[in-house]
Image (cartoon, rainbow, N blue to C red; front, side, top):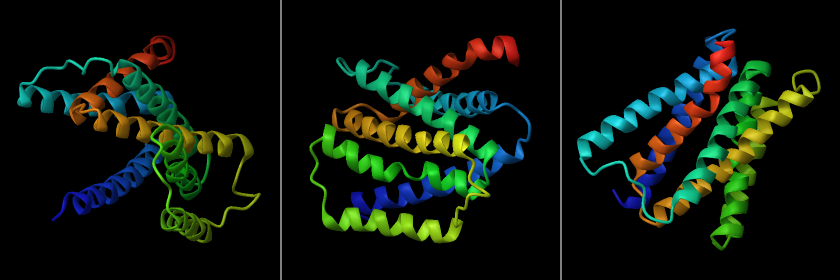
Length: 199
């Protein structure tokens, strides 16, 4: 299997895993979204830590990449928090489709930041997928609440930016476990003040 085909398979598996995660976020019930985010990222940090320890290559990030790590972590944290909030306050399919607006913003950010050329096929494929998803979800005024919907859309925008930062870090040679570990620890630390008072 070629590297490109393998990457596509990983992305499909990732999308399925995120869909399952959203379902379990809903099943977690009345636990605050911030707490759900904390434990989700704590598990991710632990998994990345195990991988890094097994690789025995250290935890250091590559020189000059700290700004990209911070941008990825900030956007990723916003994306997770907004997505979990939307999952808790909207119908699950609607929250998921708003988060899956991220490919639109990946295309936009890739064009703006990476100067990657957008093909008609890429644009058409993303538009077709989104229109198809709308037919499945069929959002209406009754099942789309304005504020949670805007927060859900924000999760898609932030996720698109975070994916773009991951792409930049990868192109610059940063290791995947380091990217995941940095983001996961950052996301956990950001919500600690909230947990100290509201856990």
